[in-house]
Amino acid sequence: MNTLKSLSEYALYNHGASMLFIFWLIFSFLILACTFLIVTIFSRLSKISDSRKSKKLKAVFELIILQMLEEPETALLKAEFEKSFKKKYLKNRFQKQLLVDELVAVHKGLEGELANSIQQLFRKLKLDQYCLQKLGSSSWEVKAAGINELREMQITEAMPLIAKMVLDKEFLVRGNAQLALLELQNSRESISFLKDLSYQLSDWEQLRLHESLKSRGNTKHDSFKTLYNSDNASVIIFGIRMSSYFGCHQDIAALTLLSTHHNEEIRFQSIKALRKLGDFEAESMLAQRFSSETIKVRIAILDYLRGTGYNSLQLFLDALTSSDHQLSLMAAFGLRGGYDPAFLSSLLAGLNLSEEVLLRLKHAEDPRLPAP
Image 1 (cartoon, one colour):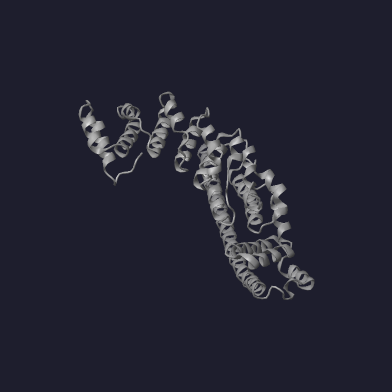
Image 2: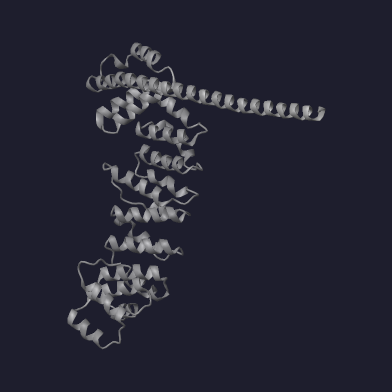
């Protein structure tokens, strides 16, 4: 009897402990759910409040900017206005960043005196100092944004600090720094800082720099050969591409030297550039080196010789029967464009050409199909 009573009491105790544990789990879950709900509500309310504040501030900033553009000589930039405006509207980073965003957005669509007025307001309100402080941030996003803002507002005093950012480990930071150095310098040698880069310029970085150079329509680009002295192959290649794009005929002699460079890609790009610039002087030299070159460079040489009208039938015939499709196709274009069709047809008829080669010749005959 005593044993049964003890077992009953033990079971009852375990049942009570289990119920207590379940109750504790339910209670903890409810507390967590309520806490999450409260945090979510406060976060949503905070965002709504920030959004309302932003709209009100943007309306004020837009009005100030509009007045500045319409009447740049008004009291907007007087000391009294500057002091009261900063005290009321530039008390914290949130407000400063909002105004920076507005000024940068407006400045992008302006030129001449109007752009100068925006830059003047930017400096008067000490926003240049605010953006300069971003360059010392531990966050790469903040640094990248600060560089862009300083570049857009033409804060040339920032150049020494931005120059250090060119070596930053973060891709976007150093890319923005490259653009800033390029655009903050008015000199035609503004691109020369690239020749000392220790890392490879990616295709994306080259594209951004190219777009920046294109957008500077008031600056004539006579030469990029200063970049040819770099120890960095990617910088040399970028310089070659820019010489080609901007039609820098002053660089032809330097490009001819680069066509013998030990780097295959540099040789390839330099020959392509000579072709586009309409050079004819390297014809014999390139033809002599043809057989010792890599397939990629041979294709560039054939394209170059095709453009100069080089009259060496055997060179093109040898390339036509190559096992490399692209090289053979380029030779087919050279033959079809450089020789009398009747003579060429009779000559080719006497050769034992494969079906693939004959198809390439037909490809070269079709004006709708591009050369490789």
